[in-house]
Image 1 (cartoon, rainbow, N blue to C red):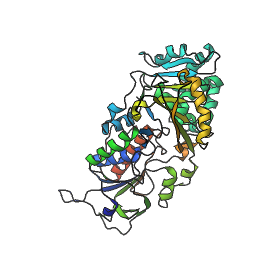
Image 2: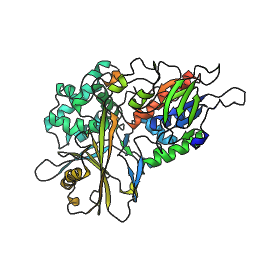
Image 3: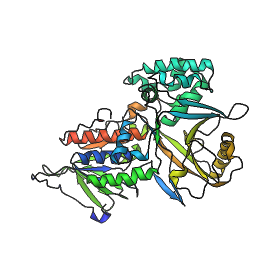
Image 4: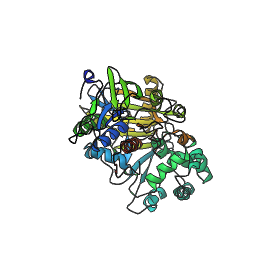
Amino acid sequence: MSGPGRRGREGGRMTAGGTRSAHAVVIGGGLAGVTAALELADAGVRVTLLEGRPRLGGLAFSFQRGELTVDNGQHVYLRCCTAYRWFLDRVDGTALAPLQDRLDVPVLDVAPAGGPRLGRLRRSALPVPLHLARSLATYPHLSLAERASVGRAALALKGLDLADPALDAVDFASWLRRHGQSDRTIEALWDLVGVATLNATAPHASLGLAAMVFKTGLLSEAGAADIGWAHVPLGELHDTLARKALDSAGVRTELRARVTDISRDDNSGAGEESWRVEVDGGTLTADAVVLAVPQRETHALLPEGALEAPGNLLEIGTSPILNVHVVYDRKVLRKPFFAALGTPVQWVFDRTDASGLKGGGQYLALSQSVADDDIDQPVSVLRQRYLPELERLLPAARGAGVRDFFVTRERTATFAPAPGVGRLRPGARTRTPGLYLAGAWTATGWPATMEGAVRSGFSAAGAALSGLGRPHDHPLQEAA
């Protein structure tokens, strides 16, 4: 990695045949930017990756808190997330973020009298749609009639055409109610999955994005929804291993490199690089630029005329995620994770081993999506709210000592998947030749997930390679 002093105007490097190799600048070192940089470098393009933070990984990163290595938030992926699985393989991280053998989600409901009631959403070895039939038939959090109604709605969902733009204008809750889903069924099943994957409840989620999640994750292949998560800190995957992969691919990575302006260099001669990227301390020139930063930052950097309606980027809303971190002085949870009903708690994960916690005890991370009501609350208020709820869910937590309690807040964690958002999301290509967009908020067809981010990187790299006259036949490019 080179330091700021090495930045400056650079001409193209000459290949063995005497022709100048193309140079691409990727702005943003999240999953989208890293993916685009790797794809471009693997295709023989000279790449410079610029990231304003002192690390890679975007909003999926780790930091130190005393002896703990803490993820800013709990991130999971599914077996159907083929692009993110490619990313893990590309950075040699697959073994560090394994998938379940089969989908198995413990679901605790604290509302019934007599204490928490445990249910499970798990698949069998049967083909779709029978793979979930046994689990739903015995799911204790719904009545018999409600369980039967789920099957009918799932069949209707399976019949939707994801390419139909009309789905984007409809909210998921209205569609579910038209197909016989009660408020309880929406809460105990559809939102249980939807809140975690969409970061929105059904009334605030586009039917198009919700249908994509459920059709792809639950109704495509039997194992599509098997869950995987990092058994090491996210920073080891998305920063340490990613940087190693970038270095091996020949990518020049610049951290703490804040981009202030990008513009066409209209004075460049034939065959010369035609983009100027202004960075604190210098200027880079490039044949292509991939802008892989959040939508508002993208809007601020876009040259005039690059998008037909650049104001659309400012209309894409955001949704927060709060993560509550609790370190107990003893083991209070024997499962790797569970989901909860009848309580503000949503999903709870055991992060003890991944964090490096020493001296016994257990470290739990609560992932709280759609956290508008809690995101700005003081830690003291959140402590009073969530510790008693954990005691309701986990009897072993009653009387256990709390060694540490803290929160991490991502106020703009994801784009809001509201009805109508589809028309606001731009594709990878802009109206300005040589400038491409990447990020989970672009038109990937997916909600704001790690999968969507990686797919956007594929799309941007593929478009850039096409613009540079380079063939690109990555097997995931069509899906991206």
